[in-house]
Every structure is written in structure tokens, then in C-alpha cells.
Image (cartoon, rainbow, N blue to C red):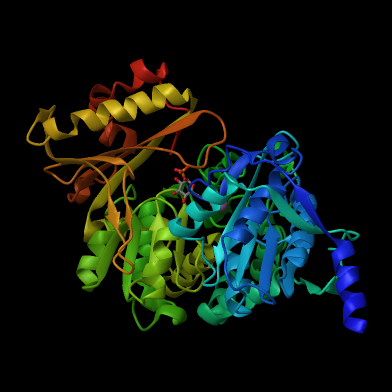
Length: 554
Ligand code: VG1
Ligand code: CO
């Protein structure tokens, strides 16, 4: 009798809502990213969330982690997800206080609590606010982004979905720690920072870094009004003793203060001005909207992300968490080969994967790699399954504390040992999709004719559309970017972004290698000048995009 009453109650609370599919819910490089008004359409978010659940098996009674970067629509989205998770049979949801979890912290919480998976709400470095971008991504039980097999199943489901399940209840209070009951499901509002801070403390030599700060070392961390503020303040100011004010723009705002939380030389100009100004601190770092990216600056010195990965790999043994050495390293295909040279010297494997963090997960789960990174300001290790901005800053701090040298000296010494990989990325943002596709199609048609051809002072060694076979599960990912390699090791790479929300973005990646230390002081745009011209000649960028210069150069 009691059971029947309970059953009836459940039936009354769970609503099945009929819907029609939306045609545009294809997850890109990092989940589904659209403008906020798109997400606010009736049933738009609900359809995607139900499509995620419908593509999973075995989650009944299990734990789900939910959190986001705090941007506009984060709180509303979380309420919807909680009610849908309850209606679909999850047993427990862990949600960061205020709905806040940085992407690496979400990965950490999933792993630590052996959750079934997690939903991360973010459009990363894209601007936020009512007219800005929003995003949603599903992470699997290893804490990393779902592999293509899963994201494709989700996309297929979005095309046929007819309805979703949601519990009709009041909103959950997200601002106090503690538990709430949603039907049969428990919601636990957890401290957003604690688990992550504990993990960092287990990897790095906090005592040594404390001594560094005690000895007047000065750091400036720009959280860009985004999610890392609370993490950086707790770890760097409170636990490591950096002076108050070390973290700037440290309160997450729904619109990131109107800024573009993308840690590069263009958008993080406030930090750049500080590090290149009078009385500059020793070290500067910035992170993006969801805290997975990092930019590293020394005093009047910029470290490219590709070089940063190589320096971390070369110095890993100085950090307690990696003192036993690295199993291997991995980089995305467009990332410079600087880390390859370190791997060679260390005698470890180096893997080249397509762009996007999801490809690193299998390699890490299989114990093949410890460190990995991307040219797009992403670095990470097997401590979680996402790239991790603050982790990279702490890694650098640990190295600086041990080596007692400046950032610039460490990088220059690195170049002396391994040579310098000049590197730059040129982005052509929001171009017409048709034009971008034509450009790529034209290039594809040309590939076979390029090898052996002389272009300026360079001779083409190979030209292909990058295809990756996962060494762990054998899955194949095709069309991951056009590469033109030259006989001297220089490269030009073209690919279209999978994270933009307006038109298409063409990315041109340029790399050339210089072993002679006497030539390590050239401006990268100059060092890469001829390759830039060759890229335009081969791909007809100016003519086909209608642009005479890139939107952003990093
Ligand atoms: C970009 C970067 C890529 C990164 C992805 C997600 O993708 O190039 O390296 O993994 O963003 O980063 P695309 O497809 O636009 O080039 V994040 O910090 O936005 O999650
Ligand atoms: Co990000």
C-alpha cells in the first residue's frame, strides 16, 4: 500500500514534456556552445540534457557532478539539470556552491567521488552575459570530456528526441553547503575549492613555494573576472602566502566584467601591461573563463604555450608529484614540436593527437602519458582529465622555487639546450562559413601535388589532412587539420575552429625550428615571415576570406 502511494507521488511529480528536436545541437571541440538566447529557447537545454542521459547506460542510482564557470545562465541551467537528473533516476548530484566548479575542479570532483560522470557548464574563453555565449559538455567517469563515440551518440539522439523528463519541484538553494532532497535523488552542495586545493597540495612542494613568496618573490595572477578567482585566492594567497592583491579580477562575474576571458596577449592586456610595465613582478599568469587555460609571463617575457609544455616536461622531476619521471607526453597536432625534443632526450614516447582534450584521456588512462598540452594555452597532466590552468601556474612556481632563476633565464636556457621552435597562430574569426569551407576544400584538392615542390626557400616534405588512430581503442578521427611539412622541420597547419559560435573561424598555425642560439632573439612574426606569405599563397587566405589580416595573432 505504502509503495503504491509513493509510486503515485512520483508519477505526479515527474513530468514528461513532448518536444521537437533542434537541428543544430552538434557538440564541437568542447561540447555544445551557442549564444545565450539560443540556449534560452523553450526546451533547447532540456532536449540536449535528455539526449545526454539517453546516450548513457547504467546511471540509475549513481552520482553526477554538476557545475560551471558562473557565467550568465549558469544558475538557471543547473536548476533544470538537477530536476532532470532526479526525474531520470540519478541517485545523487554533487554541485559546487553557487553553481561554481572550474573545469579542472569538476574533473577532480568526478574522479575523487567515483561519480558516473559530470555536466560542465561553460563556453570557456568566449564572452558571457545575456548576449554572450553559453555551453554544456558531458564528462565521463574518468573525469575527462566524453570521447567522440559518446558525443556522436548524443548528437544522433538530439535529432530524433521527442520528449524529456523533469521533476516539478522548487529550485534548490545553491548558496549554502549541505544536502537537499529532490524526489528520490540527493543534492549535495559542496565547497567548490576544497577537493581541488587538496589535490594541488599533494602534487606540489607548497613549503618551498611558501619560501619563495617569503623571500619577496612577486606574482600577479589575472583571473579575468572568471571562475579561477576563488581557487587562486585560496591556494596562492591563503595557502602559499602570496601577498593580498596577488590575484586581480578575482571575483567571478556573470559577464566577466564585459571582458573576453581568454588568456592571451590580446585579451589579457591588463596583465601584459603590468608585466611589461615599471616595477613589474617576477611572474604573471592568467586563466580563462572556466579555468582550464593558462598564460605564463615572466618580467617583460612571454612564454608560448608550446614552450611552456616543453619546459614543464624538461623540469618535471623537480616537482614532488612527478619526481619519478614521466611515462610519456602528448601534444595536439598544431602544437609546436618543442616538447618532442624534450621527449627524445628523456627517452620517452611523444604522442600527436587531434585538437581537443578528449583525445588525451585514453592515453592517460592507459598510463602512456603523464603530461600533455595544446598550443591554445592548455597544459595538464594525469592528475585530472582536463587541462588545468592553476596547476600550470603552480608547476611553474615549483620550478622557479627550486631553480631560483627568472622565467626568462629558464626559457633561454631551454632554447640553448633544445633549440627554439618559433611559433605563432593567426585566427580569422567570424568569416562566412561557405568561404571557410571553400578554402579548406581547395587545400584538400591540392595536397597530393605539394610534396617535393619548392615554395620560396622551403621545400614541401609532406602534405596531408591529419588523421588519428587512437593507440588504445583503435578509433579513427579523420579530417583533423591540413598539415604542410617542410624538409627543414617547419610546418604550416590550417584548421577550422570547433568552438566558435558565429560563422567560421580559420586558424593558421606556423612553426619553424632554429638551433642556433645566436638566432634566438628574432621577433616570431619576422622569423615566420616567409612561412606566413607561403600560407597565403597556398591557401589564398586574403582572397577567400576577404580579410587583409588576422583578427587575433598569438
Ligand atoms: C579551441 C582550441 C583547442 C581547445 C578548445 C577548447 O578549439 O584551439 O585547442 O582544446 O578550444 O578549449 P577550436 O576548435 O576552436 O580551435 V576551452 O578552454 O574553450 O575548453
Ligand atoms: Co577553457
